[in-house]
Length: 119
Length: 109
Image (cartoon, rainbow over all chains, first blue to last red; front, top):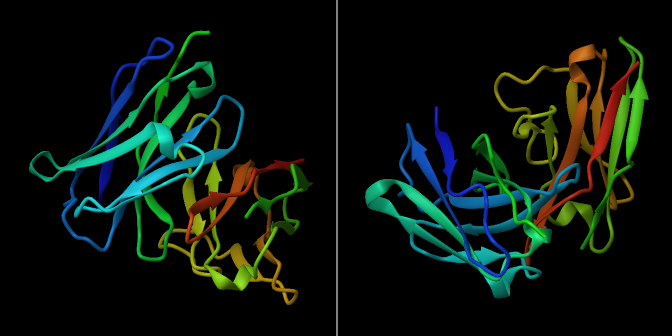
């Protein structure tokens, strides 16, 4: 069974760049029939899709975040990553990585990592 | 587009509840709708994908459907159990990306 695990700093200063990595195990990131995604959840709120990337590097981003977000894939490490620039307190959230299938839904999720941006 | 869900629903053990997910523009039938269950402190898990398909391991008490008006999808949970108490999210997509509904808190009384 595919497993995903987020990693990265839990505290990011305002105006700095948030960087997270998702490590995929028990499955390869290589097949291009999957997208690899980031989703976040503000405290006590709903889910927000951030973006999705394929092994080939083709990526889709949430239009509301597109100007600040970039994703990348490292096939050698079976990892994919998220960079979000110019963070503010409004970016404080639980960040999840997930696998996005050909049906365009998320079948495997990481446990999530809490990122706090102090105000 | 936006997906609108009721903020909360409730039911007693053994009852049946239905959660709606209404698409603001375009037909709900244009793109698959998926449903996730999220218990406190945990990542979401899929209970229905591709409108009405159950992943392996999901109880037959969970079912998905598309309304005849082509504006709404529905998640129905029959034979409610206390363990069903959770937040439920619908999700769909279009050319601009993936969209989640705002979530529905299910309380089992």
